[in-house]
Length: 442
Image 1 (spheres, rainbow, N blue to C red):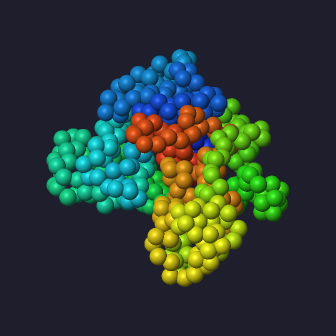
Image 2 (image 1 turned 90 degrees about the vertical axis):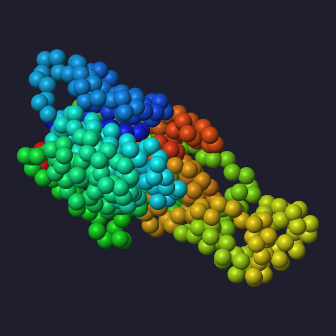
Image 3 (image 1 turned 135 degrees about the horizontal axis):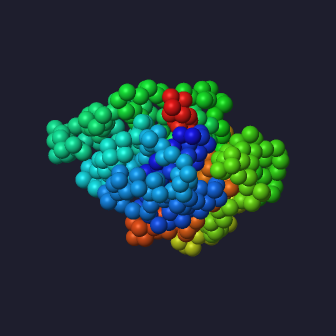
């Protein structure tokens, strides 16, 4: 059986894919208590028990050593009467990406940017056969200044992260494949999610390959409808769209893709975990209803400004505008039917969050984020549930996310609620595709 280590494990998206591919995870680690609860609960569900056949460590990777990892593995009960593996077959990990992200503010001095050096340090101490590193595409063009490598080498200012990474691997005895951007939608995930993947292999072992896309044609990509139409809350809408006929993706989500320690997949048994809906006011729901599928806040604003909008059935919005403008409700309806509306009228009517988007049911989802209200369901005037986003990430329905559902403000610096656990995860089906290539050369 091939053995793996999962670092920066998060809630366990990478681990799900590794297990589906056939790896046994001997050691895993992350720093956050919230993700630890979700991760260890799932592994217990799969028969991976702390100290028996796996070891989870919550802690800072800067304090993690190869010797500590080796000691934890050697002390597992599963090896009492069996020989220890001479080598760890693979280490997988995705160092935190906030400092590299193109989606938000980039910060070259963010200390999290340097955690991939700690990842390299642990790799050099454990010396596995293969290494996989996952990160956001912004990692490709992040430049470092005054970077000192694991072996003490000082790199020239302005070198990019991939340039440094490849040289670092060479210095610790590894060759690397050319980094590649993989889109999760090409591997059966109902989501457009581009991630940069680095694969390294120890000198003397066979070179692996990147996985070839499993779905080449755009029309064959798994859509939002195929992923979550059975979870629509409104019975009338669900009956019209879902028709009671499961897609293959929905059946797999319910039946389970991830095997337990005995090789049996974990069925959800009809229980839909983490599917609580956000309670929107009537005003918010009506604002959501103004979005067309595939339209974001900026395009909605332009459309309403230039074409006007019919508010005849938007009672909460009409009342709101009537009170603020101090005109009758009929006057509000006539006013907003006009064209060339000014910013005052638009600000009063519309959501101020321009990034908010109503997703298109006939396409894969946009990249799942950690903020609950970035996206509007194409089927109903509401945001997505944790379970719906977990489906769009390709998690099984039996996978339960623990902790707070969401959080905000300064608490986001220390808390990782369910929405963040889902949004930060590696899609299991993408992880599986990569892991199968490592299994192939093993």
